[in-house]
Image 1 (cartoon, rainbow, N blue to C red):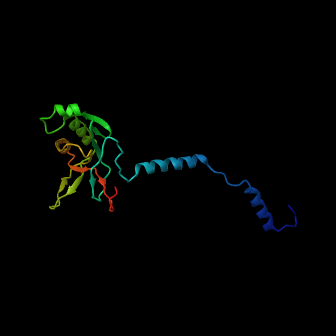
Image 2: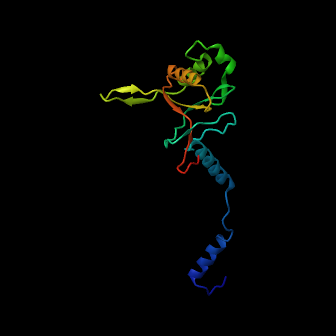
Image 3: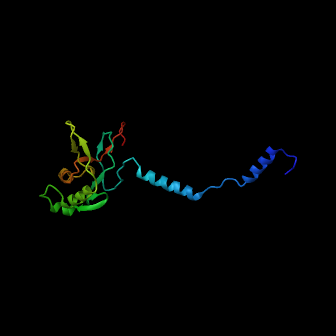
Length: 176
């Protein structure tokens, strides 16, 4: 550096010399941020969509309300599944034809009910009342009404009385 340079020029030269390495990217911090972001997006996924299942053809409806993220009971020609886990086979169901509820399904739903709190609401008198746990029933459009009625009775007996039935929404113009 020249001796005859001004103090300001010397100070700027020192500053440029100190910062000439440039910025570097800290990959560890970046990976931490992306990991947290992925988990956040997975947990806060709002869109509820029933898994496509070749064994179930849903009935059509013009309803516009979408169900919430609830426990799912699926009824198909092989049996009944809760959250994708088989709990009743059609052979078991035929063996219980005199009963209004299905014992294996009831046992599983009672187990699930013990793991979730009962939703509370306020009635017209201002008192707190139980609202019943929400549940979605997904059944083929050819599911016999008697079987569907038994599934709903079993759900109600296990305190899952806020029942939604899955359907395909008909969009104006005839599409689904």
